[in-house]
Amino acid sequence: MEEALIFHDRHGHGIAAILSAPDRPTTSLAVLCHGFLSNKNSTTNKTLTRLLNEQGLATFRFDFFGQGDSDGPFEKLTTTLAL
Image (cartoon, rainbow, N blue to C red):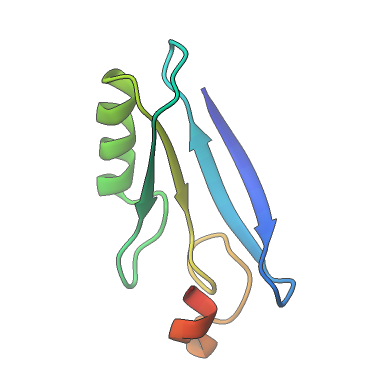
């Protein structure tokens, strides 16, 4: 099961995320952070999500500020905004 989520950072920017749960109940979760110039829906993140869900782990993947479906212009991305 996947659930699309939107969080807001301290500046009010929408941060897009996906919570993906395995078929059976779990208390384990892996946070997947994409690389520079990538996003939460990269082939790597989707593959990791599938493999981890098959092993019984939930995953939480998100787009950093200005990337993927998150708000903000990419050219304004700073380390402070990313964290």
